[in-house]
Length: 340
Image 1: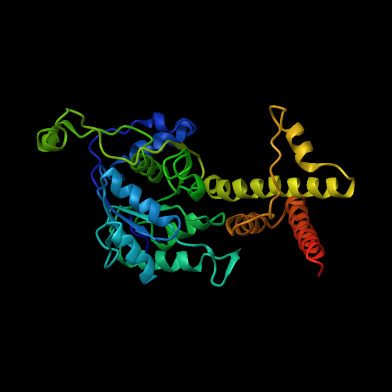
Image 2: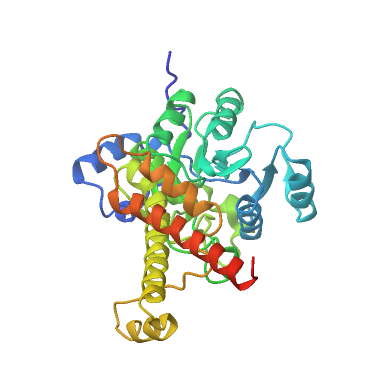
């Protein structure tokens, strides 16, 4: 039997301007759901403290939230504790859960799999408190968020806010940069926007006196992560956004690889050609370098290819073949240079 979301007592009126793309009909539904949205978030648990999760936990703590972390790796947990992230003993009594769990197969970084993420959700289904916010920042296949919502018996607000984070340029492209967010239900999206920082929420007038100690400058705005968020009407749009972003990057690199091979076959100076092409305002040819690198681009591109059973992307399939050809060329060239 499905459990209804608990009334968490929203006392102040959210600013619905944060949802410019939500239809008027759906906004009328939100009005009847607003009492289900938490008025304030204080205690936050980041689950998965790897390359993505640890910076997220640090950022959450720096903003002023009571930040906790959890990871099955003792090493990852120790590193987080040294960064003043408190260790969660269980998943109870948190206002927000942020999932930053890896979504690749164990031992195969290039193949998508969400078994680990779903095992965490199973634990949350027993321990998480009613009405809490669950944000999935991990890259996930289309349809995962609604499956998670069902596993949680509709007890939590579920949003997907896919991460955008680049370790080599963390200052410019770190945690706080424009992000996409979608919610399973409208009330989920409102709660997610409240937490991430897409709107201003003020304390109810009845509580002003109780909050004077925390608002000495008469600023009664509630705390949020302060991240500029782009809300979408359907959570599936948020889910495919991340994988398509990386598939698009894969295509850009593959085109540069193919152009390089073209230049080699036709005795054309690739660097000079690239510089000439990039003088045009809407052209940006990348450097092929070692080929499509890392594990996110190959994994997420596979996830995109698997997201549709009826239509297969011919151009992306061709791009994967180009990357293989380019790598073979580089390997052969290196062996020739070494006289092997």
